[in-house]
Image (tube, rainbow, N blue to C red; front, side):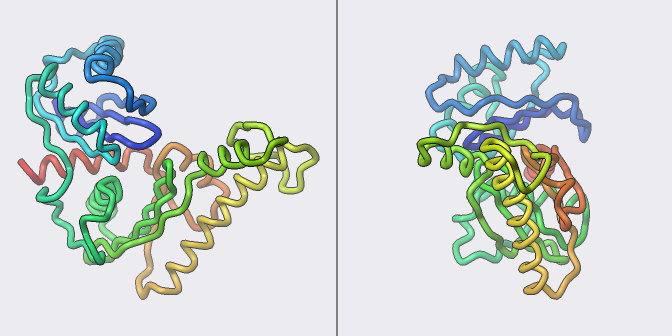
Length: 254
């Protein structure tokens, strides 16, 4: 079985594949202070709850945007799974032409999403990933990565309001009942929630004016299912897009 590991700034998402079938997935909080032993204990607990064992893992692939944790995940694979993981980075075969001033600047998570998106949907795409940052990536009908946009994530914006405005509380990110709110909490939720819906639709609309192709818009990431129902431009939510992309990249690099 293949263990895929996506290390993000806020969460570490793992998936276990048997061939192309995703058996289970897990989401852990990203903590740079944890050692490989501590993460291994967490994984051991999760594997046991799912009726899986470490011995069942025969291969692994890692994509990380948190350099201090890349080595930690590699150590887990070496010490506990007894294998050398494939790490997404320079030199890996993606099968995708990258049109960027410096291709090495593109986050590995954005490339993984783009590879998965074109493999699964086989058409021009805009992929929106709602993570610590909200990223927009354009993939052409030829399957080429053409660039995109990066905005602060929803969580970052919410936390900034709490930290920089003395009287504003920390709030949950949910859809408020109305845009014109009657209390402070709902007012903050309205600004953040509907503000991001507008950001998504606005950027996608501007991409349409620059593109000569009709494209689909795929959303992924932790808050995609929250924003998508209100968006006028998101066509589909694919929660496992990044995990599927890691599986696809592993298969391409066998």
